[in-house]
Image (cartoon, rainbow, N blue to C red):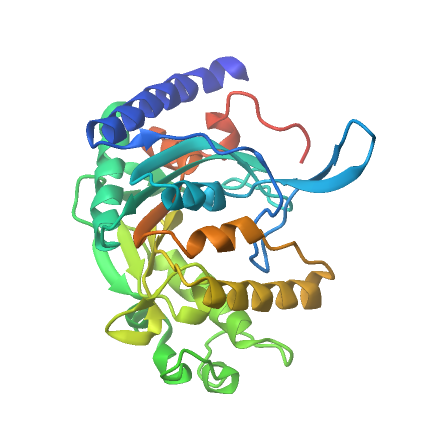
Length: 334
């Protein structure tokens, strides 16, 4: 099995080296976020691995393997760093499949005092770099292709809902960003349960009708998510109903999630509390809020940040069929 996987793994190493050089050539500093954190993130459907940290006296406190280096990176921005990237392991529980693994590698990068649109150019450049390094003319997954050297299609979430689901998404979003569950459910071309929230209906439509259509022929940048679906992003200046968030797709696979970062600690706390209330409702648990992170937001400069699934990028550039093929030592089980 290892012999079959080894060509994918050596290609992974080459892409890793190329990515590091790309960032260093552009004045980025590589940082390394601690794996253990007081909070693993405060998104309702994100599940973490927990552990106990013991003092020398045997007193226990809970820590979590981080699901993203985001909180740590933003603290570094608040401390004065301006262009940073982190290429390292993250952990997410309840995730396993051809594109999911409980331990995987995430590439995150941040630009202080730079607009989030520049991240779209970064993403396009990294797709081309990975393909060129792996010697691929196309990104491939599940029998479909995307040209990594083509200019990505740019499509708003509202445009995608109209095109692929015949849904007027923003008709269910008020000027202040609040949402109308019934207005969206009435249009939904998917099965809607009586207890589904607006977010549930949104998720079903995007997963069943929109995402399967994205990133074929060339990559797609899906941008301007409703503010209710962008917990860490700032509202778009031209329309408070949507936020500065985009996702990058190729061959129907989500590769990156990018933000114009929210830096209002009071608004961030409100969003975290809402997410944890939803998590408690659905799963009966909640994660603590990282108070140091909220303190850092108060002095963090305006910034833009991106999180890219590095293993998935390598998969598409090498033609691997499942994520374990590009991991040197996959987590046992599953």
